[in-house]
Length: 419
Image 1: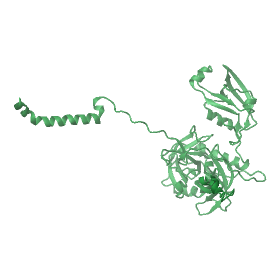
Image 2: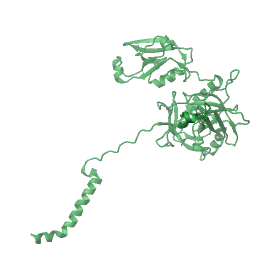
Image 3: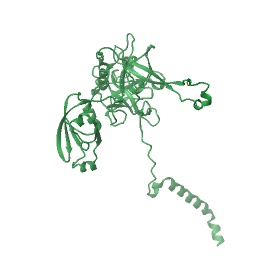
Image 4: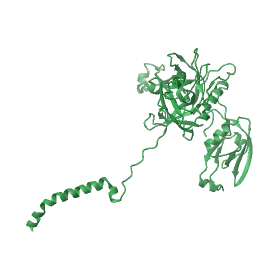
């Protein structure tokens, strides 16, 4: 028997090596046996950020200085329609046309520091009495803005200058000056400043309804405070909403790099005309990952005119709280399809309350437009001038009703109860 084992010895080592190699291969490539590898856990979902940082509640509005008499509407320059026949080899001409009107904005505010714990001790307070030394520190932030009028009006984001005690504007030609806050609109995240300088460069505004997916876009701003920077991409999408950034959302999406400090800067087309105000990004790292959002130029122009001439943005308002309708809720209300929104609450004394709307009503149409979702409906109502009549179609107790009411003016965010 030992003689037979001795004769098999030359074959044992290769056999053992082959078995070990097979075990390693099967563990490394499980598909060889027909079973699937365990899937990797998905990465955490991206959240909305503003200027590269997580979206935070909008800070209180900066009060505009009071002036006698209404301001005239600012005169902005309208850009010619974009030519898409042939693209340029270089965008230097477009940058040279737009970049001088893009400014750097430095805002600062003074905040009280927490007192040292020893100051609450009576033994130490006897040396100071009630005259405890004030401890303050300066908080600074940076962003960008766009000069849109020869009168010195500058468009930027509300979150760039919100709560600031002092705002400084620096032009590309080296001039610097303090800015006056004309007005802000937290619900669209836009603000209007005014600077008093001679021979200001002014950007032309494009008709943002003509923006098409695939158009070349250039983002101009002051990322990370390194100085004016231009990045290039394309228009990735239009009409983006439901991002949870602003109350009113109709964003242009671009993959041009937008980073902290770009907020309030210009998104321009291949001919140097303004198509949007850069506002926010989606990012896991805090830097650009190719998903940036800009407020369309047409919306920015409307906000500009209202803030300058009225001192505030005037929007229509019903005074209701709306909730999306899912299939289960639709069935409970006797609807065959989940269309419309549920009125979950009615503001006492508001237009809807005065017209007799009740919680539990299902709103199907506003005017001639069917209700698709709560945000779009809110935007439709905001576009109606206060004082105008508006017809609503709703379902109550399985019965379809039509109610006509007078639209009110949407209260300022700090005065309006939560919705």
